[in-house]
View 1: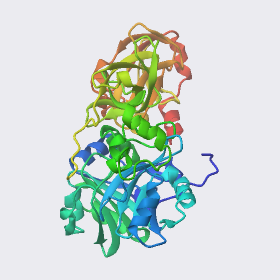
View 2: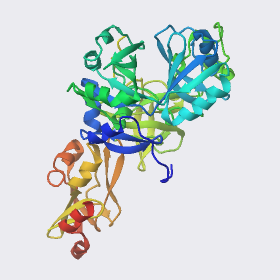
View 3: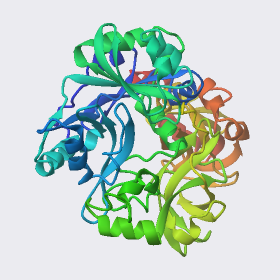
View 4: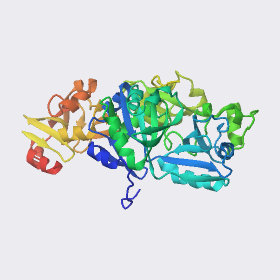
Length: 378
Length: 120
């Protein structure tokens, strides 16, 4: 982005400044990377209590079939996303991705059945492109990017208790449930999901009441504001992909080890097999595997191995295998953690590979993901 | 004598040997450190060359050598526990000791007042 670009702000911008956040440009928005507590403490606080994240930069989109039925909206979106959306029950959510004709990933998203329409949340950096993509292909649907909503993520083992002070019914929700709720009389959409590996919620709130609701949640001292820095280390420990780092148009869902998100109905032999962009490649890879896979990587030493570090089969840098796509120090893992792509023969947990860091070749062990034990309330 | 650099290092000079670390301002900007890599004792470093690496959760940063010299001692304690750099950057959180090639080179560095002006 050039310096001339004016950064957009979220409805919580003034709150971030008043809390002493350090702001950085992210996906065209001026966003908090950390608060005075710092990334390390914010990360650990989220894993032990509750963290509040502003994710209002993400795109919240309503997809409504012109016929007015959920079924027509679901079938329309299934033409762009290799996920069983028709089979999603009302008030339930699923993870998915838009694929392109080559079987690459255009963006990943969360998809909710809202009874008579779909509600999806897409990445900030892709939202304009995603909306244009849906408008071009879902001609039987009205696509509306909600500009008057903020999105809060409340994550951590105490998230339920923090939210229950505003809305006691939250205790009845399970992982990936989505409900309407009134928080301080504001109509909100609450989903029991998130991107930290912890139990928690994402709460879509009216923009003009976002700060009031955020402040009400922060009144509980177990709930602290958390910036994008800790959001990144939390999702990486949880083995979750960051679009643009770990997945993009050059990676297929099977290469990215995301085949769990492609339900039986969309696979070969399923009721609605294929019928999404890149289906030929993706169905072939589901049956026959891929030459490379996304894996967890645990550096054996203490040095973090960061994105774009080259991976080798040997400690001399002779046989290149691939690249690290995300890497940091994991505060809860108490050591460095990373993800990257390696050839299939190196993709088994326990395999050893080497990464080039500042001219040295550091040993890493291919590891099962996630690096922490998720606490989702199933 | 205490000196500073525009790259946010401090040097405490005694008998031609400089104890080198990063300033409180630098430590605050970097955030909680999780990894420190120090030069080897005996290595010859040049002014503005890479001397050490520090990493926070977020990013890796280089620490530059403020003057020409030879590393005579390193602070293993900050390798074992990088948080010492955050808690006591200008004391227990020192990085390495450098035997200066030319002691007079230090005269050109910033004094404390000039450094405080720089970060103000």
